[in-house]
Length: 222
Image (cartoon, rainbow, N blue to C red; front, side, top):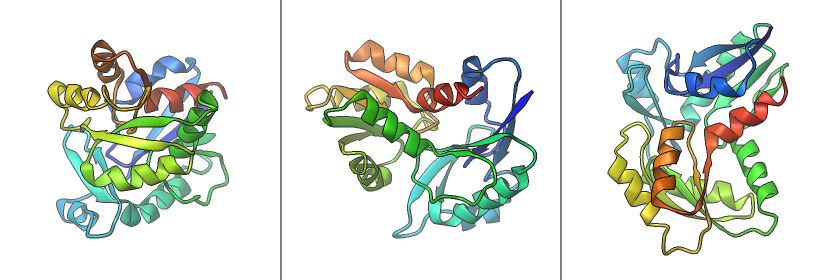
């Protein structure tokens, strides 16, 4: 029996995530979930909210309420969760596609931004413009910088998976119809398979769902 630690920057359990990605894994896998927002009070939630110049991330509480936070403020919290998971799991997945520093760990950690960028590089040897849908407008600059490190110029649109509205997603994908992109990435772990399928009904572009790339790839290790 193998155990995979899943660290969400939201609150665990992630009922919108784990049930959907379990299909990639054999029955001998157990997921151990931990969340940055676990057991935080309203005062503590306010303390991690982003200020000017900080990198905005978004996730959700387990009741579905979206929460925005500053990446810089939660890095020590993630390290504490990693420290707690040592000797409890065989591998850790950081369930966020944002760029994070290398954490201290005695067991392997999967960094989705790294994996997603390199899988995209492998799919497209000739680098093209790439369409990227992100939750929030304030994330656009950091997302463009992230994809630039992989050799892509990102053309962006926004639609929150946590305040999700079908028309907002349709508007986002329509924005790419006249753009010079063949592929669109849903660049947040919060985007789901039904959201991808909604887009596929509206567009003939290739659609990459981040959570599928991350968890399907990791499943090959077991």
